[in-house]
Length: 351
Ligand SMILES: Nc1ncnc2c1ncn2[C@@H]1O[C@H](COP(=O)(O)OP(=O)(O)OP(=O)(O)O)[C@@H](O)[C@H]1O
Ligand SMILES: [Mg+2]
Image (cartoon, rainbow, N blue to C red):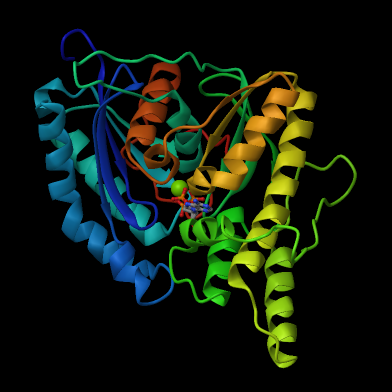
């Protein structure tokens, strides 16, 4: 406890960000340290799992130290250690998880394992301190609908309470972020592709090159993005074989529009089905400008409130993990120190 507040240390290493953060009473971010490995993986065009694990190992202690010192707390102030236990690259998850369990044990603090996607949902609850030290509290609370669009997931989730999640729909093949990254690679934009596709799509005409929208069966809230990616690759090969120039901005805009159309239609259907009138977005693709603009329009038409966290809380970070850990600990207590790391993990698994 510090100043009467419950202090949580969050740790996140599920992919290529080594992150640690401290929150007060779950939602208020006291520090948020992220050591990104983008430069390391750029040369390979994607994340290399073994290299990611090695970098987590070299960074994790310094990142945790920086999170504690920036939050101006000591181990004595920490009430809980929370860490992603999956889903993710299992070797990468293992580094954060082993560290979290070790520091929790050494400092005699409770520990909880956190589902990474619940973290992306909880990113919408985070508040930061103003320079004058006051917190701007925003009022997003469950129940609500959550859309998580990330590098590995595209999920529509009925968030019934801080700890009760029901998956309404998810991708059957590629995630939205994965499709962005693959299309970026095909366009020669490099890694990570999403922000680069986003930037050049703003210069293109979304009507110039049309790609198929895959809605699956009537009423389904599931997604499928592997066809869109193949459609883009086929279009580029056909144009090149015919000796025509490919306008990368138009291709990016056409691709982005096809993803955004499908995501927006499914989110609208889920809003109507749940009747919540409240939607949060999370995951790296939630930073996409066309998607944000469209979801604002959809929510306005459906008279629903939309909350999208700032971009730094959309991509992987440990503040969202600390927030999810806080609510999980309050509801279910600590996790066992024998908890494993998982590459895949059902949303409702209890640990
Ligand atoms: N502006 C943007 N437009 C589109 N996609 C974006 C944008 N910014 C980031 N992305 C995409 O977001 C993804 C990264 O998001 P995030 O860090 O949430 O995913 P992840 O942690 O790798 O996956 P998961 O959370 O499913 O394990 C990448 O695929 C990246 O290309
Ligand atoms: Mg993530």
